[in-house]
Length: 204
Image 1 (cartoon, one colour):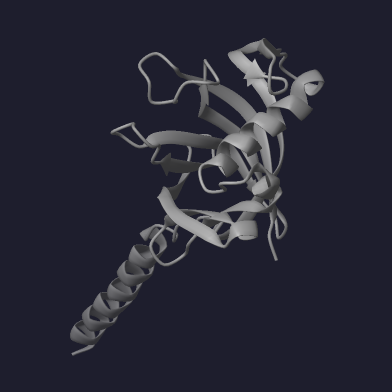
Image 2: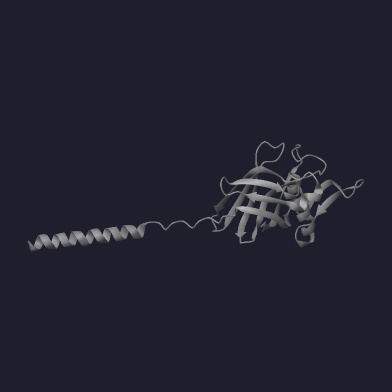
C-alpha cells in the first residue's frame, strides 16, 4: 500500500512539473504593432537621394520654365517639402490656395489611406496602409498609393517609423515624383522615385 501511495505521489509531482515546464515553454505574446491611425499633415521633407533631384519644365512664373535641381540635405529641405506637399495636395485640392489645408488620414477600421483637402471639403480614398516589424526590430509603414493613370499601386515605404502622440516620421523610400513637371506622372518614362526623411504632425 505504501508503494502504491509513493507511486501515486510521484506521478502527481511529475504531472505538475510537466505542466509547469509546458507553461514556461509557451512563446511570449508578440508586442502589439504601433498604431498610426489618425489624421496627419506633412510638415517637413528632407531629400536623401537622388542628389540632386532634377525636374525639367518647372514653372517659376507664368512665362518662365527652368530645370530645377534640388540638393539633398538641409540645403534643399524647403524646396523638397514644397514639392512633396504640393504633389500630395494636388491630388485632391483644385485650387493651389488650399494646398496648406491638405492632410492624409489613416483609417483604423479598414486600413484605408484617405486624402483630404479641408479648404474645399474634398476627400477621397487613395490606397491602403500597413505596419510591419522589420528584422532589426524597427517598424515600417507601407502606403500603397493609387496614382491616376498608373495601373498598379505605388508603394511608399516609411522605414524606421517613429510614432509619438503628435508626430509620425521616418525615411520614405520610393516616393513618386515627375521628371517633367508639365507632363502627367503616368506618361511613359516620366515617373522617378526619391528617398526623403519625412515628418507628419497630428491634425486635431
